[in-house]
Image 1: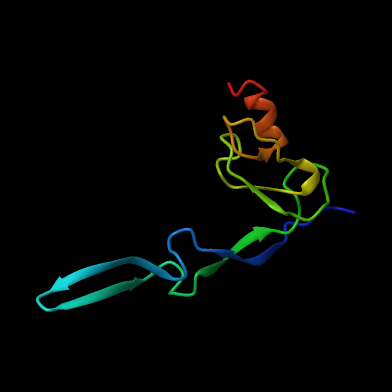
Image 2 (image 1 turned 90 degrees about the horizontal axis):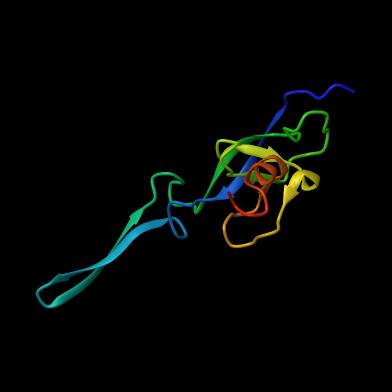
Length: 110
């Protein structure tokens, strides 16, 4: 079976805001206290937005569905891989990443 270049829509939480609001602050007006909240422009105040991801793992010869987004230096922060190609082991010098980025970074973090 040949792997197709199929894309699916996925809802993710917005990293730009907190529950759809950005920059809530207090402004003092003489004798009054006001709270002003600015609606997030990325997610339109919903707290989550849709992104398009590949349906299948981006590793060659793998036909599993994607589950994780790699933000490693060798994936250019946009690699989508399945559970089998994901390394969740943290040593403190790098975030969880795909096996390609983990192999290039190595156990020492260099």
